[in-house]
Image (cartoon, rainbow, N blue to C red; front, side, top):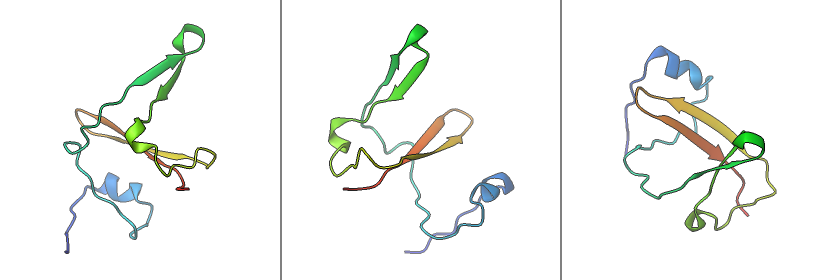
Length: 84
């Protein structure tokens, strides 16, 4: 399957020249509920909770990286962690 992707200049700059291993997704597909946990003094620390269904094969000792994408109506966070 071949897709042609159209994006604005700002989105293209966000790729920083990387054109391999690009993954497409839709905000309408992820329907697995989760929560944000508030901890610490005046609840200043926030954690995104990983649903139990998604914890399989996840290396909790690996380094995790994150990317934030903002649309007109949503803020999307993408986390990457190593598999076991």
